[in-house]
Length: 114
Length: 111
Image 1 (cartoon, rainbow over the protein chains, first blue to last red):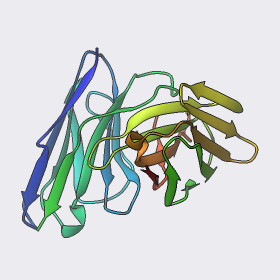
Image 2: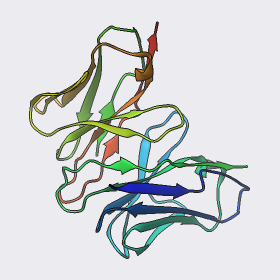
Image 3: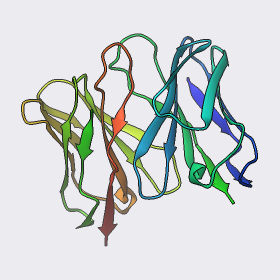
């Protein structure tokens, strides 16, 4: 069966500090991978998605970046965090290929920027 | 662009039936998903509709009308554990499975 891991589970970082969140998927190959952010009182916002190693599409311009160094690894980074970066960050995967496949979410990372 | 509307909150009593509506305007349509999200947890997949009509899955059913840009999630025999946020999401781009989510409907089930 497939599982998706995210770490850390919670993070408190000062403004201006760097960020690295990691997501890995087990039990599947060639998944589509996604990073979402859920801010308080707002819906899930798609940040990045990737259909393969080294392929990243950005949905929203911001101070965040994403990388996919391996097939089942997806990393979200920032060089300098802003207060507005606080939120619940969710990684998700879906089967590559047909667009009808549902997305499965990881447990999330709750980030507080102080 | 894409716009998805859902009620912010709903309340219902245990054992009752509740219908959560979702309307959408999207550039292209490739399916509509419903997810359940308990407080502090990740969303979990409930249902998927790509053709008009009703999809039934146990106590949960989802309906889609593409011509009206409308869907609803029907929850029967409500239980306390059904208290959660219910997210409507639309897939509007062909070739990729990116989703646009609504802000979610917080459902509170009381005894």
